[in-house]
Amino acid sequence: MANIIRLPITSWKYACSAAEQERALYALEGGNVLLFPQLRFSVQQNENRLLSPAIAGDGKNISLNPAKGTLRGSDVDETHRTLLRNMMLRFALYTRTLLQNLLPHYEAGLQQARTSYRPLEIAGRSSSWRKDDTRLHVDSFPSSPIQGKRILRVFTNINPHGQPRTWRLGESFDDIARRYLPTLPQPIWGANYALQLFGLTKSRRSAYDHFMLQLHDRMKADAAYQSQVSQTVHDFPPGSSWMVFTDQVSHAAMSGQYALEQTYYLPVDSMLDSSQAPLRVLERLLGRTLT
Ligand code: SIN
Ligand code: FE
Figure (cartoon, rainbow, N blue to C red):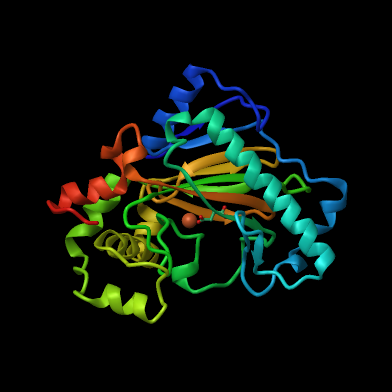
């Protein structure tokens, strides 16, 4: 089961000690949540107007490609777009700096992916069961195959009303895989090429992606599992930030409003101990390679 490991970092530019770097690496790769209780992201005065659900379009998140500066998921005017882009780019840069200082072991392999802003209240939002992140799951996305790469995410709660972001954390990836893998269908030969050909996936859906999507779906669809599996509840207060491999750690976001999130991809070979990667766990249990 995932634990919350705390690090008393107070600045995004904090120069971490070797002991802190080691603690972070072991915590993350071991399937825990790394919490920075005092690491605040400051919203500037003129950005306060972004703290409104009206900023989001139809989707639940606003996303930014930090390399290109392109925004998606909001139809606000140009003034607001500039404010949004600035705030999200600042967060993207801060997380990048933090990772350089905290996880130098990952530096060579780390790929910065999209940044997201989440201005909607999670609780009471309606969505299909597959998109319902209030159900325990490991992250896997139908249109974004990753072929075994790790998904490392940095979150910060910027709620101005003192409201925490509340998560549930479930059993270990090993336990999830042992529970569901024996009953999962095998990938259909050629289907991955068809999905890519018709633009339904951004790259080839590997056998790894197939099994991760199946695990994601089976967990979310299993109501008995959701209520009965051993789990803990954790509140992330405003002014705190946290980091977690969301492809490995079973999580559910139950309530909360106004968070920023930055996604990174990491090749399995860049890990200190790649045997803990979902790719390697699944390969061990299936007795074959999955790339
Ligand atoms: C998720 O990754 O399931 C959602 C996390 C969050 O928005 O807090
Ligand atoms: Fe998730």
